Length: 307
Image (cartoon, rainbow, N blue to C red; front, side, top):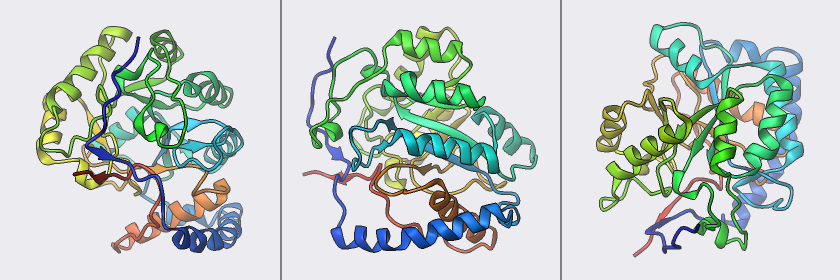
C-alpha cells in the first residue's frame, strides 16, 4: 500500500543559517558543563518548582547523524536515563489530570513521539520498557503500513520507514498511550486544509484499530501559526482532552490542556542530556519569573509558505 506523494503547500525548512548553527554550537560545551553542575548539585529542583515538561522525539536512528528529525540511539538512551534520574516521568494522561485539578506538576515530565516511525516500536519502546518509562506516540494514520516517503525525508534523501498497524496495536497492548497526529500530517494552519476530516478522521481510524478511545492530539509542524482557534474547537468537539504544539516551552499550572508546548530533542541541536537540561531549566526559570522566553531556533517542526 502506498500514499500518493503530493507536493506540500507548507514545508519544514531543512536548513538553518550556517553562522547561527556555529554560534549555537560554540555555546553548547559551556551549557553542558553548567547543566551537569546544576543537576548533580540538585540546584535545578528550585527552578522546576511548579513547572513541568513535555519532551518530543521523532525518529531514533544512527544512520542520519545531522538530520534535524532524528535523535541518535545513544542520545535517546542517555536522555531517558537523565529524565528518570532527575525528573518524575509520568504518562501524559497523569500530567493532564494534575493540571485539571491544580495538583503539583513540579519536575513532572511526559515523553512523546510524533509521526509513527518504525524505530519508535523496534528501538524506543523496548528502551522505555527497560526503564519503566511511559510515553505517548502520536500517529499520522495514513502513513502507517505504507512505503510512503514524507516530503521532509525526501528532501534529505531518506526513505521514511513507518510502523505497521500490528506495531501500533502492540504499543497499545504494552501499555503505551496513543494519540492522533492527523491523517496525512497536514498543516492545519492553512485556510484550504481539510482540517475537520484530518483531525476527526485520524481519531476514528486509530480508535478502530486499537479498540479504545483516543484522547490526545498533537498538531503537525506545531508552530503557533499552524494552530488556530477554529482548529482547537474542532479538537475539543471531537472529544480530545488536549492538543499539543511542537515548539519549545515548559508547562505551567495555569496552562490550558489545549495550549501545551513541547521541547524537541534531536541530533542537530543537542549534544548531551545535560545541555538539554540547561536549556529547559532556563525556560522554567524564566517562566516562573514571568519573563518572555527566548528559545534558540531549533531546526525542527518549522514550516514556510510556498507560493
